[in-house]
Image (cartoon, rainbow over all chains, first blue to last red):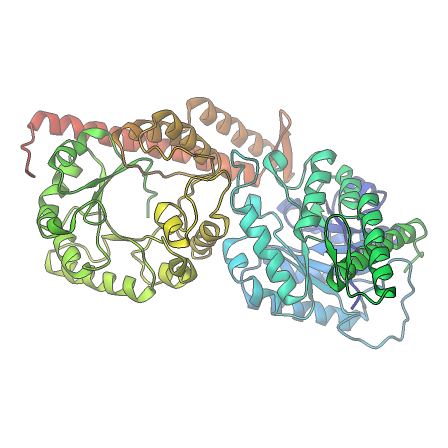
Length: 322
Length: 316
C-alpha cells in the first residue's frame, strides 16, 4: 500500500465549534477531532453530538479526519463517530491487546451497519460499490503514552491489521517526562528511537517529532515546532501530532523534503545514472560513494516530495462530499 | 505503600569503623553498608560479622539501612544481613531472574527464623551489565521485594560495555532508558540520573552534586545516592522543592480548580498551560515537599535522641 502523506495531525476538541472551524482552514494533513483529553466530562455528550457534522466540515476542507476516543467510553465515542468521511480512530492510553481488539470489533460493527468505508486520499473519488478490504477499512492509530504501552508496542501494533500508524501521544505528560539540562525531555530519545524501530519492524508509520525543552504537550511555538519536525523527519518520523492551529504549517514544512534535500537527491540520481551509462556499478562524488542503496534513498525522497506536493494540491480543490 | 524519601545515600565499606560509627550523624536518608567491592577479599568474613551490630548505628540518625552483598556469596551474606531493622539488600551486577528468586527465598527464610515480617526487606537488583539490561524485565518481575528498578548506567556498566565513563554525551541512552521503561511498565519506582557532562569523575564535589540534584528533581527525579559525606547535604537540598516552587504549585492547583468549574479541560496561568497533567504534577510536588519535611523532622528527632544517649562505638 502506498503510504499517505500525513505530516501534520492537528488535535481539536470536538465540541469547540470555533476551533473545529479554524482547523478546517489550516491545511492540516489530518485533523483529529477529540472526544478525550481536551473535552471536559460534562461536555462529552455535546462533543459526540457535534461529531458527524464536524467530520463533514473537515473532510470537505481537504484534510483527513481521525477521531480520538476515550478508551473508557469507546462504544459511545465510536457510535457517534463512525460516519462517512472518517478515516480512522486514534486510541490513547492503550496498554493491552484486548483494548485494541475491542476497538477493532466495535469499529467493524458500526462500519458494516452503516456501510462506511475509509475514504480514498483527498482529491480521489470513492467508488460506492467497492468491496470491503483492509485497505478501505477505517484505520487505527495507537498513541502509546504509558510505560506498559511502550514496552508491549510490538504486540499491541500487531493486535490488528487496522493499525497503520503509531505515536507516543502525550507520553511526556502521561509519563511526566521533563526537560534535562541539555535540552531533550528525559527518556524521550530512548522512547522515540524505540518507537521508530518497532514501527518499521511492524510496517506502520511512526508519528512524532523531536520535541525538546519547553515544548510541553504539543503546544510549542511555530519555530520550535518546525525544528522538532525537521529533526523528527531525520530521525525517522513521518509526521507529528500538534494541538495549536499555528503549528500546522511548521509541521507540513518540517516533514516535507527541503529544496536543498531535493537538489542533492537530484544530483545523486544524475551521478548514478551517468555512472550506470558508463557500465559502472557506483558513482563517486566529493562526499560519498553513490551505489544502488544511496540512489534508491534519493529516489524515495523525490517520491515523497511529489506526494507532499500532490497532497497540498489536492487540498486546494477538495471534492465536495467525498 | 507510602512513598519513601531517599534523596541522599552514603555507601561505605562496613569494615571501616571511622566511617560506620559516624554514619548516623551525616543526615543521610539512606545508609548503604558495603560487603562487596570496597571490602578486600581477606576481610569478607569479618565484614559479615559486623552487619547485625551496624544496623542500629545506622538507624540512630533516622536513615534507612541497606547492605550491598557479593554475587559470589549470597547465602552467607544474606544470613549475615537479614536482621530486624535491615531495610534493603542490594544485589550488584544482577544478570538473571533466577538469582533474584534465590535471593528472595533466602531472605524469606531468615525473616521467618528471626521474627521479621515476611516481605519487609526490600531487594535492589542492581543492573550493571549488558546481560542485566537484556534480562531486565524478567529480573524486575522476579520478586515483589523489588519495589524500585533502574540502572544500566554508571561505572560498572561502562566497564562491562567497554565504553568510557566520562564523555560529553549520554552513552547510556539505550541501556538506562530500557531499565527505566521496564520499571514504568511494571509500575515500579525508578530513579533517574540526567545526563550532565562530567569529565572530572569527582565523588566529593558538593557544588556539582547540588546542580545535578536540582537537575534531576526538575526532570522528575526524586532519589539520589553518594560515596562521600560532602555530597549528602547538597543531595538533600537539591532534591527538596524550594518554598517558592511549592507556592507556585498551589497556584497551579487553584487555577485548575477554576478551569474545572468552568467545564473546561484546559486553561492558562501567566502563559503556562493549566490542565489535568499540570495539576497532577503540582499535587505531586506538594506531596513530595511534605514527605521531605516529614523525613527531615524524623531524622532530627532520632538524632536528638541518639545524642542524648551517647552511643558506644561498636565496630572496631
